[in-house]
Length: 113
Figure (spheres, rainbow, N blue to C red):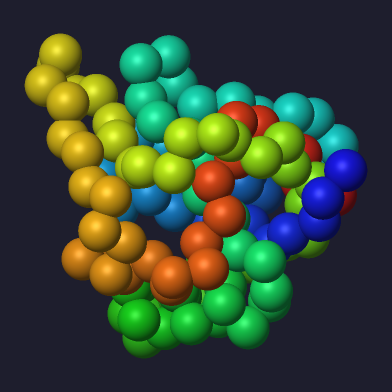
């Protein structure tokens, strides 16, 4: 299984996705997490350095609640980010506009180790 690094938000000992879109997934240690039905693939990073770049560039300087966790993942065949809010789909396959590094990995499932 491939290994990568997922940025999560630690709130009251619960690990949430740090999505900028307001749709937060809960990640549990050693459990597989999949996208919300109707949403595109999950994202993670190949290296810890890329995860730090994401935190610094996208999430700003107040990142004390964000953690980088090592994870296993199932690669996604889809390499476009999208999400569904109230039956309106938002699509963006230009990663830089979302603050995602070029080497962002797309996954159909992620397991935090």
